[in-house]
Length: 473
Image (cartoon, rainbow, N blue to C red; front, side, top):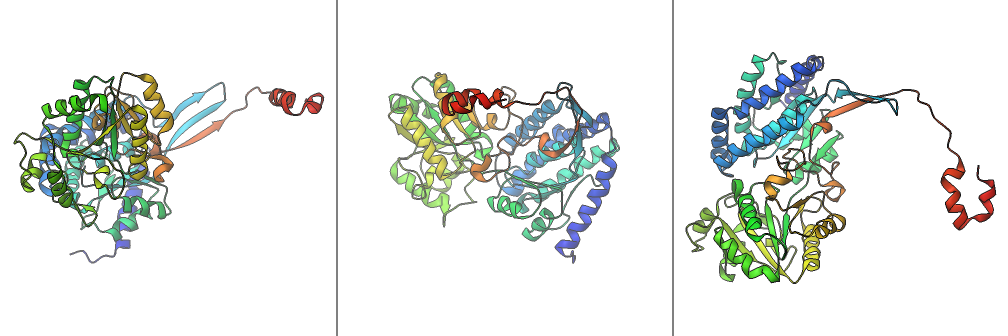
């Protein structure tokens, strides 16, 4: 039994992390990249990936092991793609015209607070970004997923030993994870990354440490009358069922234009999505939320499991449970995030109604995160980008796979999506290696010319202050 106080435990971890980082910051780019590759291999090695993914489902009861295997592999390979040939040691950029030279510096000791929904993929993503930028890192996993990360860290350290990495470059608690420990850690590091619990994100903001917290998802996707419907619903099915909808980027609400509503429901039924009747919807609502909170015994389970557990009497091959809704807000819980293969369906008259409804849903829950659209009209895509309070508009893609970076789009691979000031986040893009760096800028003397008033105010004075035109110099 550990009789040390939270302060003593954290101070010991941070002291070892600082020592490791002070050694690591002197490594060259090739050494850094080999260490990054070693960490990536620790999870991408097929036997390791299978072991950790199965353990994650066994321990947390969340998600699907085969999908976690794919997620761990794909997210890690995608991140390696993003980081390939990226310089993070020494001079990383030189702008001769402006006389600016940029030098990369580590931030120091990073703490990452990670969720039980992704007990391997999210920590690995944070670790690789931290190590690519020559930081050390301490991971505070969700209590429900702590054993998963402890076992993963053993595998990581086996690989790190092969490449001569400093000892204690990556650490976690060797005791039960508590709020007190996590809060203490937040106050004693140089950079804080928080993914998951909104309470943790809020606590991080109060810690006094530079904190990057991300926001809640509640993805809405619009399917309009011009969309390739078969393609759209195939992608939505793939996205919604992946890892039993544990992702914050999983579609939660589907807005259909009435001209294609019936056809859409029929096509969705062919993708094993079952539309519940009013009585079934009531049963699902009563059990999916308990005292206003999502029921942990149901979330992140398959639609087949949920339907059997609640005796919904739907087809055996069900993969998505659909409910029709016409309202938004606390009185309509299906308009919020469900963390399960439950899809809320809305019918609207036209695109303008769809956009307005999506905005209402965002203002209720998930503001800043993202919205999806399946359409052939480019002007509608731009309109969503201009009018909706989101950081990402995902176009004609499977939302879960696209939002956090994809091999077929240009977003950085990440499991942590910033939601901007809409959710009081410090970032509005996908968390990536740039957030783990300090940059020193060398400013050299360049040829220049002092600005004159007439360069900037001639047009203005001609229009609003003609008497002063003659005084412009």
